[in-house]
Image (cartoon, rainbow, N blue to C red; front, side):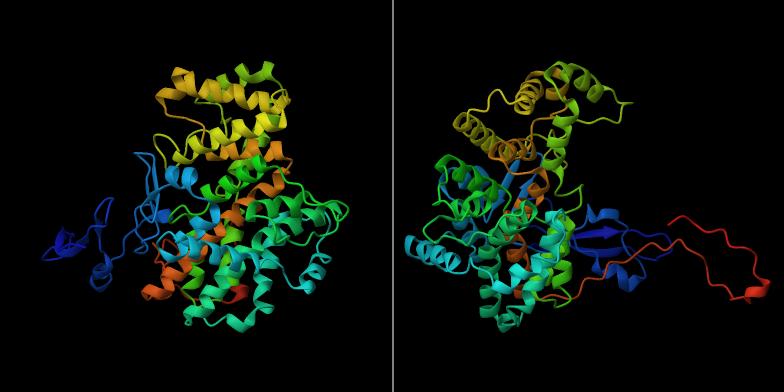
Length: 437
């Protein structure tokens, strides 16, 4: 924080308004506009793209530099030298764990992976072809009916227990969504396996066979979880914070994040990549679709290239590319038609002058979609896996908000409706011109 000031001159006021200006550890200065309300003014910022809604110590993004930091550690450093559960500890507690702390944390998560048997009966109420995100919204929200012994949001111990339960149970619930759609029996967690091994075991294992998970695929899954663990104040994280500001329980708040992530503009990007590859259909069609992507009058867009936040490159994509190559090599899928299209598109994006000039590099969604397709995960499960990895980020922000002191969120509006008017009798009213809804 600093004692710098910003001065705002407003027509109609005799003197300018002086506003405090704050500096974070890194990033642009922030003008505190709260005093404007007392003067009868609000700021207008659709989508809150120019508004800092909170102060946070968790994650920092510099889109221009292609930088993503968790508690000061670069995403590349964490992906290379850490794992998902260690990153979870970092996001929750602010520092990396010692060896003893890490082992204790892993053991706690391992011992919370099972869910109440009654939850299995919940799934019978869902149609077999229900979208997995629909099931996740309902099931995660319902967890508060099972674990109401620790729902006091003002009790730090209760918050930590809820955090452990959510991180541990999300892979179990995600796998149950998949098994329900396949008509296969649910698989219990196996505490001999790592977090990511356990997820793949519960997804693809059966009671007939012993656990058998490829270390390469488990590492890839761990990278996917880690690279999606948090991404600052995005739509779903902001939703979790807003829901939490009402005092809602943690399971309801995380369910609100899942619902927001379900939107195709947020969590559906890696699913959109596979949809695009299917639309292209064959390598011989690539040039035609690339030409369409370059035509500003054509609505077609290549999905998985460029990023709204990262104006240079997505730092997560570099890590994912290496993992993608490992997975395809492990599975021997170099001749898969869709994956061949994807690799050709990747080459074009990295070499073609049009894409290089516009910095439309492959992003994390491009590579994670390819990896999950190669592993055998259906596209409608992609966002569920995104939600599983992002859960720790949502919890960390929810906990930070409660710890730092908060007030219920209440955005303002620019009202452009009717001015005050009198209600006439129905008999004297003209026919209404119904607006579309």
